[in-house]
Length: 271
Image (cartoon, rainbow, N blue to C red; front, top):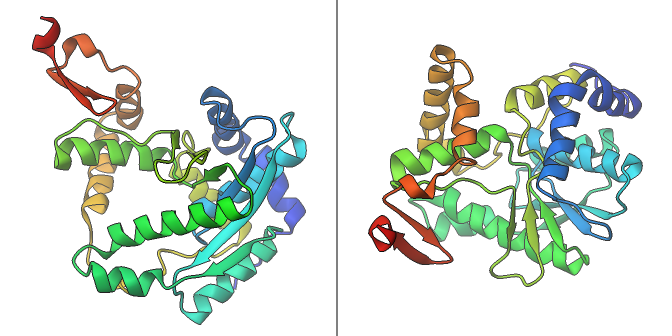
C-alpha cells in the first residue's frame, strides 16, 4: 500500500510543487471571478472524490495565508455509501487535516426509486439540495463545489452537441431556492490532469462515484464527450482552451438568437 504524505508535505506540495498548475490557477479564479469576499462563510462540499478533497485543502490554505478573512466549514453528505467507502472518506479527511462534518441521507436509495432511468441526474439534484440546507444551517452564505476546467468545457460541448444550446458552467451562481446562498467553483481554471497528479503524489486513494446504482451503468454521454475532447485535443493543440474561451467571447451581433433573464431574443428584433 502506498504511503500517504504528511500533512506538512501535502500542504507544501500545493504551494510549491504544483504552484503553477494548481495553486496559481486556483488563486486566479478566486480573484478574477470574485468568488470570495471579506466575511464570507463558505461550505466546502466534500464528496470524497479527488476534486472535492483538493478544493477543501486549497480553501484551507487560502484561509490560513490569504489576505481576505472568511469562515470555512467542511461538509460531506453520506448518500448511502457502503461501510468501506464511508470509512475511506473519514480516513482521507483525517490524513489531509480536514475537520469534516458528515451528515447522513438516503439519496442513493431515493434517487434510484423515483428516477430509475436517470438516477445520476436526480441524485445530483438531491445532493445539491441537501448540501445547501446543511450549509445554511451552519451559517454559510456560499457553497464551494469541486468542478474543474475540464468539467466546464465538457458541459459546454455537451450542451452544444446534445442539448442544442450554447450554455456553460458558471464560476459562481446564485441559488434559486435558497435565499442569499451562492455556488462558487474555485477550481474553474484548474485542469483535471494536475489534480490527478497531485492526488497520486500524496498517496491518498480518493473515492470515485461510490454509487452502487451508477456502477451498473456502462458509459455515459458525458464520458463520450470527455473522450471526444481528449481525442481532438491530441490532433489540435489547445483545442480545450479554445472551447473555454468561446464562452468568454460570444458575439451577440453574430448569433441567430439568445436568451437573457428568461426572455428569448432573435437577431431580427434589431435587424
